[in-house]
Image 1 (tube, one colour):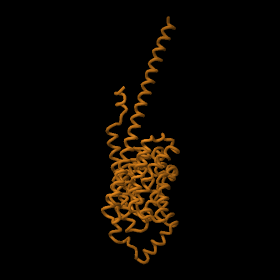
Image 2 (cartoon, rainbow, N blue to C red):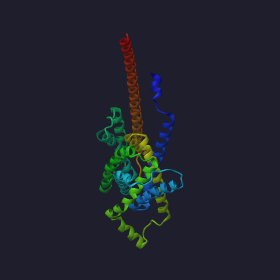
Image 3 (spheres, rainbow, N blue to C red):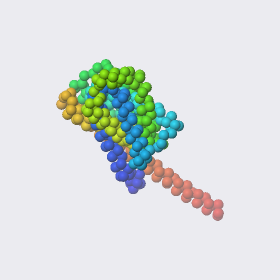
Image 4 (cartoon, rainbow, N blue to C red):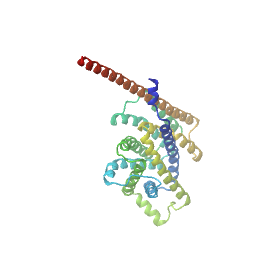
Length: 348
């Protein structure tokens, strides 16, 4: 029995690959939040900034594919139609995120980002028919939420504009977490194909948001008067870093989504913000008090507690599966023995 459980255990090679993807996503996500804050400070055009990120990612995949460094699924109109709703949600999530960072500090972003695991767990249960999270899982999610909220409450100043963008970001990121998990599981594209489709379709949508937000007027006025700071080296460096990390997080993000659950992916995104906070304390003049750092420990503890809860549930599920398989096997043996006995009786 125990050997059967070991047989269905986690493959060490697969576990290492999954861990590598999670670490890569965590590093990119942690650094990108700070890099985007730096970029939007030096380059105050959020719609254009996101468009440049999409262009870099889509063009990067296309060029590397032509050079045969990687393989991606070529563009197909029917596939694009199926993927378009996910690309729209993804664009809105990135767009609201960039505007949130423009109008608020990183701490505010972290607080609202920390709300997503709880909401994603609920959405997974309601819309994707996933099993109801255990009590321990819900406790861990509330610990993450409480720790992050306590951290931000120590010294963050909120405005109506920042809260409006934060609410919009919260709605779109929860939708994106759940819906794109469904898309990547069913559409049949490989990881680089997902990166290409997502960024290429988002790039096509970019001009619509330039017009809707009126950003094109600010951009043309800055070009005409040569008053914009986007020709300066600092702005160029910030935008370049943002674009490169945008490509990296596209790959690690989609690959990680395939490897773990939507809620686990979301929790990873929240817990890795610890590194974001450390960097934020080092480079910005606004940071939390020592009490805020204690709240961070609670957030990290919630992440560890969540990992323990889902790991325990997975082991229990494996044991029940093995037990059922064993019972089915015993039933099958009994049926075979009964059939042989019946055949023998018929022959007699």
